[in-house]
Length: 91
Image 1 (cartoon, rainbow, N blue to C red):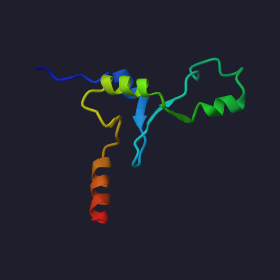
Image 2: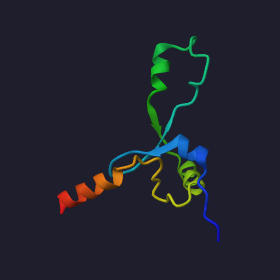
Image 3: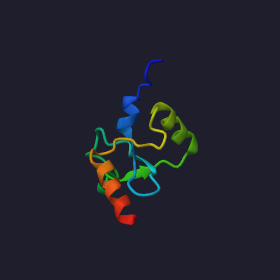
Image 4: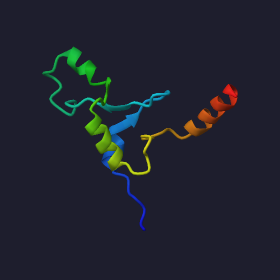
């Protein structure tokens, strides 16, 4: 059976927060162009991430990213080593 492929655009749009909960977050829409006529406060909000709260959307993202059931999306290399070090310190 062939390997399951990751949906690349989904993996670029969503990521998991660091920490115990691992919430699914996304960037805000509307920052592509026409920024001159937008208020400064509105433009500042574009830099904040938004937590995905809809269960249906979380399930769709999980389906588009096979093999990432715990939503390990775009993990930084070296996170595994850091997690192992933290686990050793706790033990």
